[in-house]
Image 1: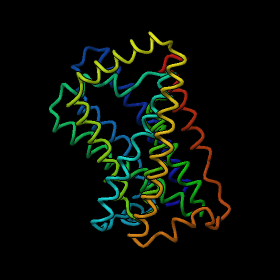
Image 2: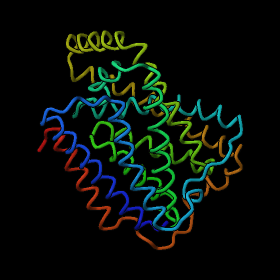
Image 3: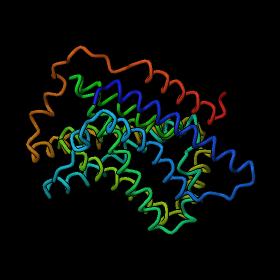
Image 4: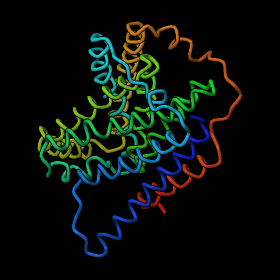
Length: 308
């Protein structure tokens, strides 16, 4: 599919997401019954998936071409799980930095998540969300962009759009970082199945931790706040983030080595290593519809954060 069509599809995703927010807001204002977080998640994923699939079908492209699924070696699956674990310090660091400026969105909805059975949230957050998002962002969008030959640009831009699709600054920050790492995993394997497994494992671990340690997390947060208050917030915050940064650097370096190992197992090491030298075709990835979509998304994030 042409990258310009992918950009238009992304604009429709943003408009559909905001439209869903408006419809639900009007529903609640008019006394409508509260919609469960499960239904909210399903609707949120639907407004992302439908425009993407519609764009593919309209283009006449085969879904199997833009959304490549193929088998992985058992060893690769094992290393993908290890890869995910090594990414947690990086996500923790980026999330912590973003929380200096905005609210932690996941924490804000934790009560709604915990009100549902764990198996339901595992299916919704651990399986459905990753499946839709990998099909759309590491499938439709990334594959469309890569036809320009701009592999590095495709990875970065698709990751930014992935983070932006969450429509809040907190998830945008670590979503964009995860988007890059998931895209690298796709490049190392040539299949959307690999980033889907990684994404599903990451989300599943977060859901399990949320259910298993909800009280412990609250107590730890309270103790940490008391500790920071006693020692002086600024100095302690700097030390805390310095430790997180060092852990992120060490474990992300390990993650890069692991993704190279995976590419070797899948016979794509040469391709992965030569990505920076890939011949470009002269196309620009950014188009007017994409700029409009990004402006709308950023404006919505500022509005949601109460900045405007």
